[in-house]
Length: 218
Image (cartoon, rainbow, N blue to C red; front, side, top):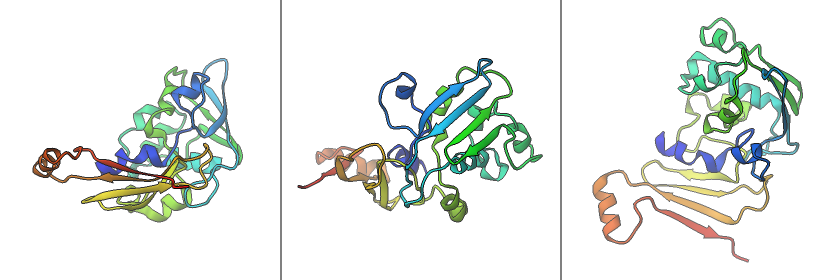
């Protein structure tokens, strides 16, 4: 599982990033974000035409699902405290509700998140990997296998071709990536299962955290 999440940033993206908040260019899923004067209502407009690596389009429905999944007790999420100030989060964690009362969808590309109280770091928290957005249908279908081996579908520049936790993960470029041309055809992340193997690899001149990249051939 640890190895899996080390790859997640290549496979899935966030609503916002630190760079987009600083008005610099960076891949993110929100085209626009505004905050109410009292600091409790965040309004989002998603970029249109963003596709997950299974070909389905990202919508506000997937964002809502991602956050509600986080607060569903059966998920066992460890990072919910980053977002527990969203209205209705506590009721979901306590098993009193199955939806976030503070998450409202206006249409496929617009939604609002309402907080219980102003919390300045909220947008910063949205820029952490805990807020990667997942596709509702694919995640629900995978069930307990989501996050195991190659069971991850995101909106990032790469997608899994294979992921053997005992040998290596092979990522191939996402041809439908919305963030521009992906420069590499493949990324191979080699796993070492024990320190002895790592040492032998190091002594033979192989980096212990080996990544082999394959450039596009023209």
